[in-house]
Amino acid sequence: MPRILLILMLTGFAITAFAQAEQQGQTEDKEVQKSFLYQWTDEKGTIQITDDLNRVPKQFRGTAVKLAQPNREDADQGQQAPRASGAPSGADTDAANAAGKAMWQQRIKAEKQRLADTERHYRQLEQQRNELLVKGALAPIADKMAADSIAEEMQADQKRMDEIRNQIDVVIPEEARQAGVPPGWLRE
Image (tube, rainbow, N blue to C red; front, side, top):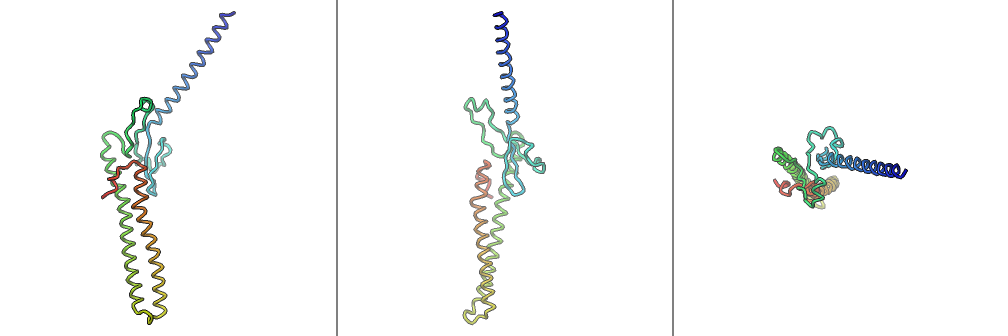
């Protein structure tokens, strides 16, 4: 009878060990599946990153960039994986880097163009207002009202210019930093 008890105990330990090994194998399979990150830019120009390609919207899957993610062995050995730069490894690196750089430069260029257009409009409004106010106290009331209306439009333009400058100087560089983009990519 003690032999049967010993066999049952050993069988129980073996089953438990097998179940633990199976569970560990499944965990490692999941880690292997999540060994890449995927980065894409949505319609608003925001950089998105996920570890599951199925989470990338279908319209962006063709432009999603596969990024290397540190695997478990590297982390266990204290090795640091290369920092994700927004470009895949291999032969396509140069093309992906060029496309990424062009995309970031285009965002900055578009904002700078908006700023130039708004500044030009502001100067035109300022000139119109000054022409209306040149008559001083003798100016008709309609001219004074038109000048006030132009002044309000100038304030709106000033607010737009401040928002655009914030995009150029703060928002886009911060998004680029978070995406791991080299600082030089934002310069033309």
